Image 1 (spheres, rainbow, N blue to C red):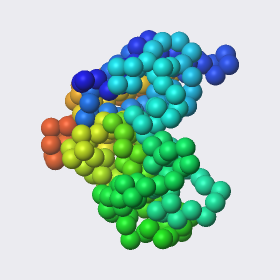
Image 2 (image 1 turned 135 degrees about the vertical axis):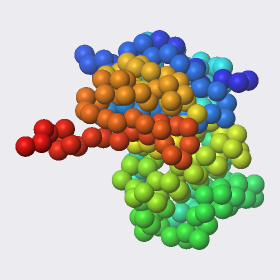
Image 3 (image 1 turned 180 degrees about the vertical axis):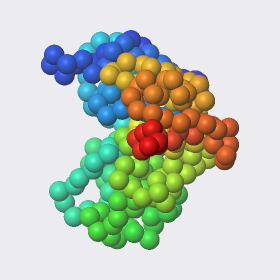
Length: 267
């Protein structure tokens, strides 16, 4: 089984506003797949449809070669874990409590955790380096730490696929790199398919195996970072001057916004 997610002619509307328009692509097992695009392009809606949070209106989504419509919520949660951009809990849960929630799809009728569940929780926390936060409440830790805790929860869920909606948003550079390195580690060491939305084009270029660029709900380009991140493509989508050159750290492209002052004629 090489394809973990298959999307065909997917469209979605909120009332009279169409936000996804005939999207088709596939994601291979163990791939780091990143969706990019301007604000309002439909990225989060795409993630919600792909994870079953929104029902398909038109088109097809398959998870592990099975139509998503054929999954119960519990069955789907055993195949796919979703890390939202915002996560709130009304109760004063500790970090270990939150990570252990990842075992919910696997618990029996009484919902009692076994020794195996506790062992997997501790292993996930060690993998994401949050073990030292185990007894802290979720609202007592930083944004970067919180994201690693939510990723630990997803790992504890023991799925083939992890989907993340802008996991690096509002984080400083160091925490962004730490999260992205963690995603790369999951892909290489656990062979997990990582699917995420990102606003940071350069981070996406450095880490993604495949990029999907969408605008106004439509696919603009799909492929390797070097194929997607070209000057003509990006400038037409984002509508601002950009410089695209080779990143000195590798073969991937580097995108630099060009401020208006550099475009003004000299006096």
